[in-house]
Structure formats: structure tokens, C-alpha cells
Image 1 (tube, rainbow, N blue to C red):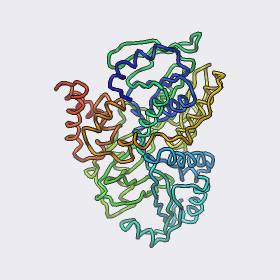
Image 2 (image 1 turned 180 degrees about the horizontal axis):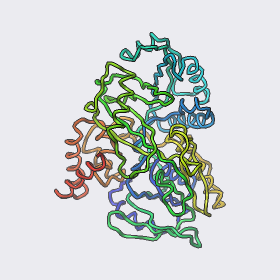
Image 3 (image 1 turned 120 degrees about the horizontal axis):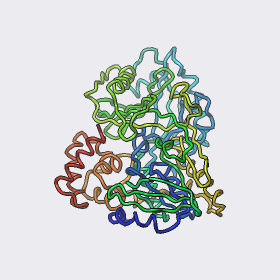
Amino acid sequence: MDTTNAAADGFEQLAGETWDLLVIGGGIVGSGVARDAAIRGLRVALVDRHDFAFGTSSRSSRLLHGGLRYLAQGRIGLVHEASVEKCTLHRIAPHLAAPLPFLFPTYRRTPWTRWKLSIGVRVYDLLCGQRNLGPSSTLAAAQMVEKLPEINRHNLTGGVRYFDGLTSDARLVIDTLRSAVRHGAAVRNFTALEAAETAPAGWSCRLRDGSSGREVRATARTIVNATGCWADRLPQSRVRLRLTKGIHLVLDQARFPVNEAVVMAEGSRILFAIPWGARVILGTTDTDYDGSLESVPIGADDVAYVLDVANRAFPPARLEPRDVLARWAGVRPLISKRPVKKGTPSNTSRNHQVRMPHPGWIDIAGGKLTTYRLMAEQTVDLVGRHLKADLKECRTAREPLLEPSAAAFSGVLPPPVTREAVDHYCQQEWARHLDDVMLRRTSWHYYHPEAAEIARQVAAWMGQRLGWDDAAREAEIARLRRATG
């Protein structure tokens, strides 16, 4: 699958036939829909106005989890659904679903008591069908201190240990798209849906190439709006969203030495310290947001809040803003059932919604990274019912995402910085800009302290492959700076 020329030639292909399904949005949900539909025998195309995984799907906490917090809120169905999917992803994509133990310290006079969590984590294991990624256990205070010597010991009563999974969110999108293409899907980034009108065959869509400005007409029998936090901005959409912002900070592991993920409770909210190779990810916030979706700002108050929580949980750390090596912020597209925001963002449901407000137009919104496969299955089921098609059985819960040999440059940790890897991303994974590689194909920008120097080297390699002159290379470096604030 060489995509070097596909970026130029694939645009005309979109107008060359009638598609059973056109997916708008190349995040994790849209990618999952395209893969499922292609495996089940539909002719499917997918387009995204930006790069694949440009939005929320590359700006998450990188966790595959059932959501212990949702269990405390009584959302048993959501936890069961996500817990099963977490284990399913570990089965079909083990290279992108690494088992990760979590330590949850408990303290006197807090909402998170040791006895409640002890029951909770056992229920959590049961909701995975008793096939969780590792067994849960209850820890005494001394055991918690042994595992976390710098933990705040004041009123410490012990805690629990349970398992979820660590992924690379954008890599999961790219590998899902690679699988979709292997099964016959046509996918194209930097291609915008400008208009969609009903037509005898279903929908007539005007698509625009982001580089050249060229436009074509594509015909699709059905359309799936899988644009995430942009889902309520398409004229045909009937989605109502509540957007919330979450920020993440990256530290050196030597500066914040945790070998297992740690839950840091802040009242009824919880934040995480997540080990990520030689780094640790701290996050996340959960605040209402109504700003730009292309560039989500991280304010000094956001950083101070996360560091303050971490410093209270680990008093010897004394973290300061200068300790932050990198940061990113994402927007959660939560389903809103009311025109006015009520309750805290953390209490807003993470359930998803699949609806057909117009014949052949399907909105899918809400949900979680962990449940994307199930969301896709339900969406393609609805497509099949609308088309009155005799679809093949859904196989996405058991068919491997990629063959092991195809995952050479894929995993939960960034691969080594090499020209071979950069050539692979340009040839095989639709990378057209420097930030496509540095942020979404690799996470090199977030992981390496010398990210600026690496970016210049990668720009040189990409320039040789894609024909950039000196001015184009500098423009790509400036583009990366804008993308990362």
C-alpha cells in the first residue's frame, strides 16, 4: 500500500463511482466505521478535512479503560461495555493495548474509601467477563508506600491495584485505517466535505482538495457524520454536544518516578499519572469549552491545577511549570440532552449516540476511545438496515487489526527516529506535513526533549521525499510550532 501517489490520484477516484457509504471524519470512530463496513463488503470511502486523528483522537489520555469512576456513578452498562471492548482491543491489537496496572491510594475522610474501592475493583474485573488485563487486589498502607515511596502518607489507609490498558491513540487510528484499506476502503485526508444534497442515488457530495482547491462530486448511498467535536456543525446534523477540554502534561520519569499508573483523587474527580516509557503523562482536566477546535489552548491556570494535584499526591516532587517537557489539549464531544449545560462536565454521560435524522444520513457522536469498535459495529448495522443490504457478519471483534509484520513502526511507545520510519509514514501512512509525523504518526514531539532538532531532521527527510525546497521546509517547521503552541 504505497500512498505516495495516492494523495494526488485518489481525489479523482472519489468521483468515479457510487459509494455505499461515505464516512466524514478520520478520527477513531470514523476509521472504525470504514474498517467494519469494508470488511462486511460495502464500498466505502472516508475523507477528513484535516489529517487523520487530527482532533480528539490524538489528544486523549491514551487509556483503554472501563472507567472505575463511572462505576462509582452507577453507570454499570457503560463500564461493562467499555470493559469488554478494552479486552477485545487487547486481543485484536496487542501492539496497541498494553496492560497497565493502576494504583489508587485511599485516605480517611475522602469519598474514595478503601472498602468501597475493594468491592469496586472486583466488580470491575467481573464486568470484563472475568478476563481483565490483570487481577485486581487490595493493598494495605504499608504496601502502597512500598510501591510509591513518595506518596502523601497523611491519613493514608492503603488502596487498590487494578488493570486497564495503555494505547497510542493516533496510532490506533492509523492502523485501523490501514486495515480498512487492506479490505478495500478508499481513504483520503485533507479532503473537505463542502456540501451534501439529497439525490436519486442517495447523496451528492461536493468535496474539496485542501492542497489544490480542486473540487469533485461524489455520490454516496449513505453518509456517516463521524466528525467528533465538529459533529454539530454540519447542516444536516442533529447532534447536540457539550464540549469539554482536557489537558495533558509530559514529565521526565526521573523527575516523577512512578512505574505504575497512579490515580490522584481531587474530591470526586480523579487525575492520572501514567508511565510512558521514559516519560510520565499527567492529566486530565475536564472543563467546559467553547473555543477553537483546531488549536486548543493550554493556560497557565490549567497547568497549575494539574501540577498542584500531583504535588499534593506526591509532596517531595515539588513540580513546577519548568518541569513540563511537552503538553497537549483535546476536546471531548459529549452528548448533551439539554440546551443549557447542567451539572459538572465530569458527570456528563460518556454514552454514545447513533441516529439517522434524514434518510441515509447517520450521526454518530459521544462515546469513548475504548468503545470505538462497538460504536462502529452499531453504525454499520444501521447502514445495512437502511440499504436493505445482506451484510456479512461483523468480524472486527476477532480479526487482528494488523499482521505482526505490518506493525513494525507501530506501538504504544514512539519508535526510534530514523529515515526509514519517516519514509514509511510518507509512503504507507498518508503523512503530508511535518506535524503529521511529529505529532500523530510518532509522538516524537511530545516524547523527546530535543524535539526541535528532530523536527528539522525529519523536515529534511520529508522534503527530499515530497519535494520541499528550503522555504517549504521552514514553512513546515513554522506550521508545527503553531500546532503545538
